[in-house]
Length: 432
Ligand code: UGA
Image (cartoon, rainbow, N blue to C red; front, side):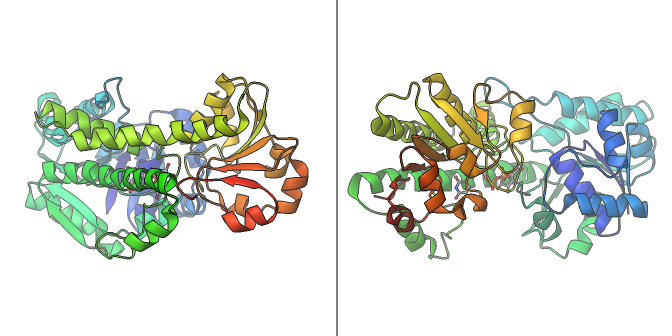
């Protein structure tokens, strides 16, 4: 099939590449000419395991193209996916101006029937507004349908998530559009859930909020574990082995971050408020998430007494492992909290340092070229992101490098017994 994807960010680029990989012809539209040039040359602007090879292979085969022209994309495709950013506003609601602008642009060049698909994460009822906008701005009076097709990929494993989805959600009110969408996903052989547009939009917000709720739940349990001497890892294993609950997303730590959960939970709260059904449970999820970081910092303060002029090493800058994404990262917040209190921070991250520098996120912190270099002379070490690499650092060498053998593990990455066996004082989350 011939597909057009507008917006070559995370979702747009991974979706476009994977659609091409299964045999569709994909044209990706982006208004950033430099990005388009880079992609045409086989380069990719983000780090995502497996993506570069797929982009290169499909650009070479001619199945994946890039352009800055919306008209070229819309003219040459049966289905047009909108995958542009939906950033948060100060009150938590979503800035839908990019979606609205793209809807107008599509309307301006729409000459014959197309399915317009909303792939960006949007609040419920956005599809209705997209349809109204296209109708209003399409002078040619061309026929079209709007469909919601939310994305469930995780950064760091976006390619396997897209190639082997748990489910595909297609929300639409037209049989013709749904039949075309089914054909897009046929090669993926995944269960397809067909709903109305509003339900599909809600599925995305409700899924992310539920996962965040699971994390805040286990983080609240971790607080009780600390107060009672229990071990949150054992509690998580015990409750997670119940199939109705599941062990995934029950890892306690310093809280969730990233470009999705914080924004989507705030947006779900905002749209629920607007609809007159305040979602107070989710406000508590947000509160617990903030508390986790505060409690962690309190632990560090308690052990070091004064943070001013203390040499502190931080392992991890990205919001989670296997990504270079440093947006809304709790690790970044922790580093800045320490800097604010006058600590001398040296950080190391396997993939996130370039972007942290580019976006000036941790100005004032030094960067090291390895975990051991970061720990040199440190009076404390903080594990802020659970990269596997950190778990394989030689603990004898680490102890020799540090001034004081003190570790605060914000992600429960290291094995407490092993670490203590090497003579470290080790504090983690929810493990006595
Ligand atoms: C999340 C969802 O998992 C995807 O299904 C969804 O498609 C995506 O948002 C999106 O809306 O685009 P992502 O933000 O890439 O994906 O990252 P996750 O793996 O979900 O992790 C989010 C945060 O939760 C990270 O900061 C991670 O460290 C934290 N987390 C995760 C925990 O603290 N504990 C856990 O048990 C799991």
